[in-house]
Image 1 (tube, rainbow, N blue to C red):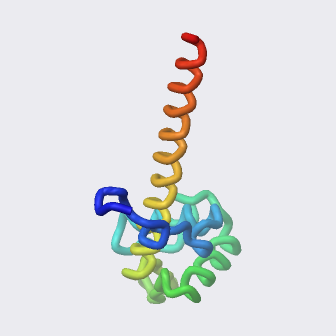
Image 2 (spheres, helix red, strand yellow):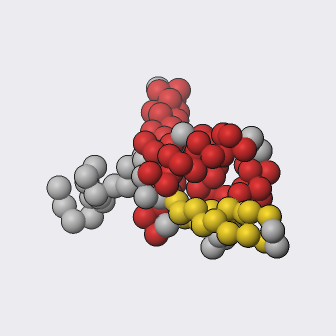
Amino acid sequence: MGADDGPTPDDRPALDETIHHPTRLAVAAFLSACDEAEFAAVRDGCQVSDSVLSKTSSALEAAGYLTARKGYVGKRPRTWLSLTPAGRHALDGHIAALQNIAVAAREVGARGQAERAGQARQ
């Protein structure tokens, strides 16, 4: 392989099994747009229930992708969620892997179209 052949499979971003789950992906995407968000804002933005967001945030936190900060606003308890640098990196890599898949599909489609066009001319 030459230097211009592009990245090898080991160099390419890979889909992240933890982030890949639709709800985890939605939460990570939501949090990627802000430094920190209140639990209720994430819940509403991702259109999930409290229990689903709690379970999802626990899974992301266990993976080191999310942190939860608890505190109070007045006398009311609140939880704020944020992506860790590892979480942002995982999300970016996951998105890059999806983009690579789409690019590969377009290339295959373009080759197929060219082959079909060549066969039609014969």
